[in-house]
Length: 329
Image (cartoon, rainbow, N blue to C red):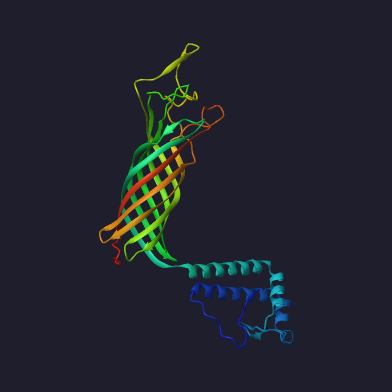
């Protein structure tokens, strides 16, 4: 229903200029609809039909001055004769609601960039199907960080965090014999990636005291540029039908000597951390978990592995400096 000014009641002024523009545009469209529909136009100018209304609406055209009231029934008839006007009214109402909501939710604007570097360790496994027993492989992760803080929104400090990192992933096997006894054999696969996480950073804390906690979440894309095996010189084997094979508990040996087949890796990363800020910069520690959605080996029915996805737990330290310098500190 179109809401207009009630009699003997002041108009409520909205601070959003776009709201006034949309209202004027909507009024003009209704006027154009009246001109295109002579029957409705003449109906609107019959003052005898308008005495039971509680709202007023004014329209002026060349040589015609109409000061009349509009009921909801008139609006319905007007919309019914103009399908395009109906779409315009719904669109304008939606835009007004969205604009009003956005205005009420905007917090303290920041527009602050912070640049720096990060480093830490990554504890990696590969989620294999069929399963391969593994220890966590500990490896480095380090690179550059850029953070853009847009606003403080209901106490939350909203930012986007981008990183470009070197990340060593892979796995380290826990090798058992076919009789489930530990073997002296060792095997590790190192996969070197260029890692590009893009995360939302939502902080909450005491800015004046220089401390806050935060949550991280977002997608991560990586590209493998290196892949190599590290295994012991001792390699326990057995012979079956004249073929020498590694002795393993579940008989899964297809990974040995097999290069990775999908170099592009992607998944979801999320975590939490704490930040201490001072005049010389931001000191940040965080822990994050990465769950891969892609596989390093092909996973068709003819392939030995139905699943071979990266899985990692990372602990990182980051140092950032504001550009330009934040004047609040």
